[in-house]
Image (cartoon, rainbow, N blue to C red; front, side, top):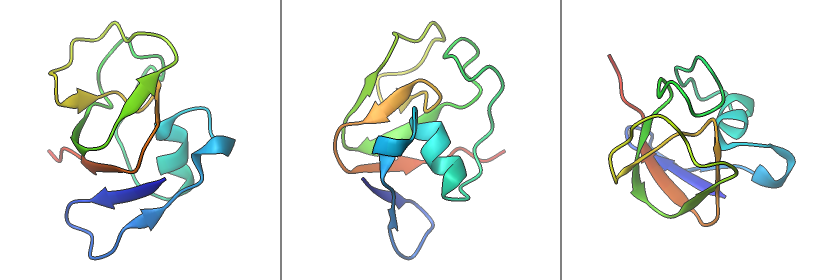
Length: 87
């Protein structure tokens, strides 16, 4: 997977096959994402999916917009571009 994160000058390369979720892959790549439950319940880790596709191991219970994903419970199935919300 290639991760294009807005604000970074070059894309990050990840091998997500060894990680159970996108959140785990991001953490392994030293990309900081806020989270709490790691199960798709709370929505704390929500990110904006700019490009690409993900699939969910279990449908998340947290409410998300059509252009948002929960990295704690999804896995990319293509190269993706995300926007990490900052407070």
